[in-house]
Image 1 (cartoon, rainbow, N blue to C red):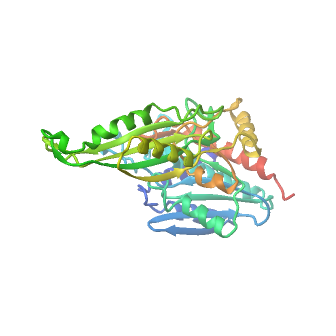
Image 2: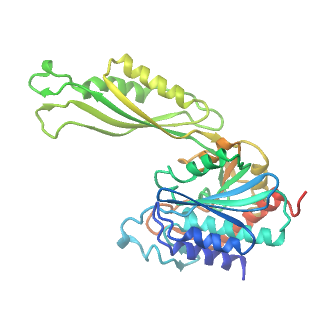
Image 3: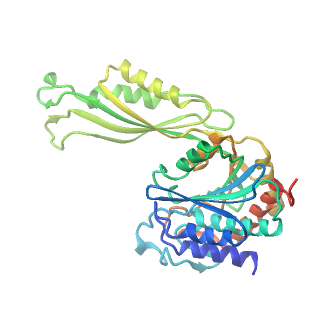
Length: 382
């Protein structure tokens, strides 16, 4: 069976499973069954409603792990799809299905690369594995976050982590991610005094009272960024106040805000400076902070070198290495001391109606993943 057909068939099998977050839809069982047949050990880690899978081969040395997710986002308007999003369809060299690009195609390429690698090199050096979750597209509380905590508790390391997020931009392999910005959420309640709009002197409007502080937060230059990350961004994403009546000064203002920040700032500093501004404006407030993930960066290292070399061998060019985009599950693995690089297919259709992936690119991705394994672990135990 050709590289293209084997990777394609597995992608189709995964995409045929309805696995909207946090449902796995049987994807991980399919992967586990395949990898067991070539000698992998398999561990299922279920937390709450989330399925996680760790499958590995080898016992001694540094650990190289592929990282992926089997869950997908909702399909949206099914009538807008040109075909059933959970019945994979081939048209003009593209595979259409929800999750084809984000990221069941990458998962399939990882599995095929692992099968081929350990079959050809059963005595490879180190430990090689794949870590999957069904909670990447959701709240990400019981997925890789919990798995990483479990690994740390039992002294288990991951030294190198290749994430299959769809990183490519215009053509396959033209971009990789070597880090991601941190994400810090603020849920703020500002309290005032409710009253009649005709008697503002007898009330305290929390909207008016908070406005100067919010303007200062929005205008503030938090840092200047650095060569790897842009300056920190502060954005108010939701704001709500009032009873719906037009003649009542509201009693409170509720808003959500988010910081996207690189390594030029720390979450602790952003929190402290935000609250300093709120206090200076004499606001009666309550704030709840949620750190979704700290920034991480792999600016150099063996994994980055191997990834770039494999891409040069496949495409003839190195990829642009950057830290753009949102967050990924790599944020939970990086604090373990791992080098983390993200490489996957073109991201033009992810989360969209008629999501699709190039069949040819699936085969290329599998070859690159296999090449990276060889460069990182070698053909035989050292």
